[in-house]
Length: 275
Ligand code: AG3
Image (cartoon, rainbow, N blue to C red; front, side, top):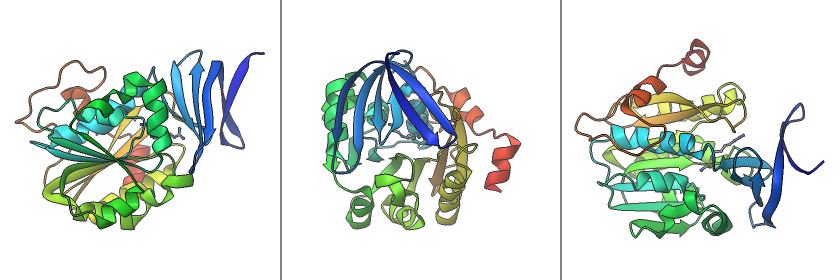
């Protein structure tokens, strides 16, 4: 009865979402895109059948992927976001007064267009004049650009479809090259419980590329297994706590300095995966 979205994680594990309605669907150059209105989680962006973000819990993921790296840096001015076409990471990065410019490189401009139209509370950062949108393959962008950044954040979809190569080691070396000598990067690192291999791959790339590498966790209820990891690679600053010179951010719903430190405390099964 009613309209249901079947999100198939594997042949043996499917999550069903009851919908009020399907707001929009289209086939873009890169993927199947849908904006749906769910019963329980507000409106959601779905790419190739996988829920990417929902209005109800997006704050957990977006605050945690953005503020941990941003607060570990004493004064992030120039920031690069790879992917993140819904704008959630951009919105959070722009909350830092030190930021003078944010370049957001998204391969699929239809993601940005649709999120601006249907998910305005997430996509609101696109109208900030510090935001610079670049429609390009992030891989090519980091390989060719001469700009230097303080913080690079990789907000990719899963390593199937357009995001595959964002999980490869070459990409990490290219990001290293475009970071300032005290720069750092953060990448979403999938579920250590459900996608242990992808998780280990992202962390392995960080460790092979950067002198300092770390992993932290947050619970993102609408991502498969709920357990979600982020990996940090840093040239100078240790990411496990906010920089001492940083003033606390106000008005957030998840991130606090205590949450920042606590997120790096790993359960043994995750520690085993990164040893
Ligand atoms: N970024 C990561 C989505 C990964 C979800 N994967 C999954 N549930 N299998 C999404 C973009 C958020 N700005």
